[in-house]
Image 1: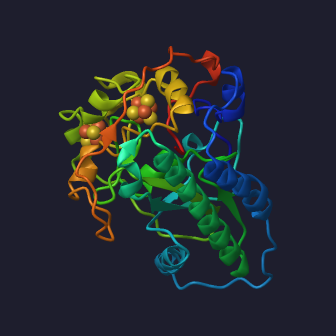
Image 2: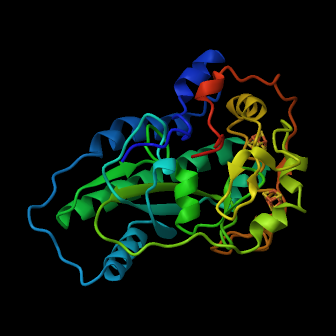
Length: 317
Ligand code: SF4
Ligand code: SF4
């Protein structure tokens, strides 16, 4: 299946960093995790498919089986959706029919001060953890006799993680551009495995989160780069509930997070963390609200040509 003509193009992080003079974050733990992702995980994306196909009684049974497996392999949330052309990056294509979306939560305790070294490490730690989950899930699917494709949470994926996550029922799109899960809030990351095993699909949810965002502006208030919008943008297309989208100004956000440890301030300040009383799920004691450091934002910059821009500035972050 090919991407829709209106799909956004895949974003070249490297080209963008190069345009700004390179990535300025230099944290040894982050570098080590990124090295493992690109040099140890990426080479494990392919694998042999078993010759015998396991038969399932129904798409519902197959979906339930694979969801249980994904959770055993480290996913905190799992959902399934059918892939449509608008879920594929422009210029890309994908053979498989369904996406099994997996999400893993980030620990609130690492976001007690943002931007910080701890929050940067936590972001990349979860990318690495989810990388292991999607690789192991793909290996399992191939052992059942079915082909599949890995869509790693960072890197050169074919699928747009945010539309896939919304359709798989993970939550609603927040003002800050990330999906908000009714219980996990926005502090989680996503990846997926695409396969053509007939699977029962999940559906987008309406838990009142998008409507709540229309009245809450905490992320906008605390965004050090002033990149979070005040209003929805009619020209930016609709979310899965038919609302105009909120579009984060990537020309302000990206230069800030490249300089200040991937920033991420909009995630821990999001009110949906505090609905869970701002504690880690293991009961680890935390402050109720993070300390947000307002460094002077660098001048807005967006050298990405107009035709290469895409509407999901925070995908995968
Ligand atoms: S990551 Fe930081 S700069 Fe970007 S939108 Fe969130 S708070 Fe603003
Ligand atoms: S902080 Fe408030 S406005 Fe921003 S995404 Fe969270 S709920 Fe929505």
